[in-house]
Length: 173
Image (cartoon, rainbow, N blue to C red):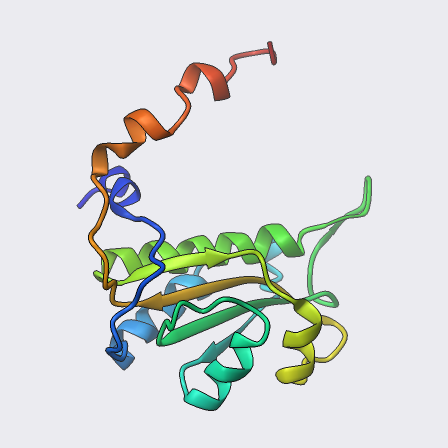
């Protein structure tokens, strides 16, 4: 499958089968995150893999998990992130988001569903998983086998803005 076809196939899954994700598939997803580009190749991502009941219960205190069998808490190490000297822009959010996209797309290619969660309580995560102050939870990726029908790949023609509304050449109109 080419990348654009895969991107159109991928969708947010909010209902999962209670079927474990095979270790080989999980390792391939994590490897996709490992090879993701980061600013100045600093690799500030720190990924917490949650798949055992006690950890899943802890995570559920901070985020709606939809009973996904795997939760990836994508954190960033503030002390490792590259900072642009011109304006002190820290790359942590960008780097961890690129890593998350790589893992999300790898999951889709492997036939797994996922949903990127941005609404979660960072303080609860830090407390429950004893994260040091310099490790910041940025994204959460839920992964598992979907237990709901996939939407049509053609949905993008009606649910997405046309390129003419989001892409501009030479100047922003």
